[in-house]
Image 1 (cartoon, one colour):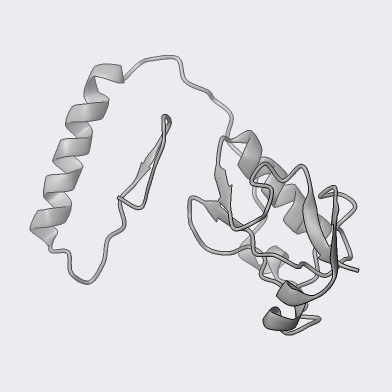
Image 2: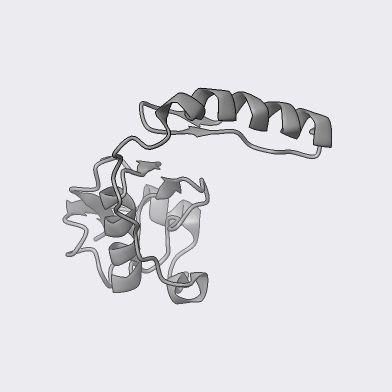
Length: 136
């Protein structure tokens, strides 16, 4: 399991898996979920932009940005700044920002939507993203 908490589990499928192992995992998960079908969970579904809207400029080399002087600001104040840390929302577990990339309003909105949906963010010094480090 790659990620697990009180709301979700993430099982990565790799080249080492077979149709049979995937079927076995699907059946096992179905057995876990079955008794809870029909429960009143959250109906919120985030509205995320297409991946093309989340592309950004690499302003500084990642190593240089990571070790640069930086300051913690609110996520909204970070727009236009150069990220000094990585931000990886789970799911899907793919970095949305790496050090040296420019923080855009679209990325901030995507992170807000992800958090509102109960997603987990790793890599940033403040996992709640109340503050975010940008180069000074």
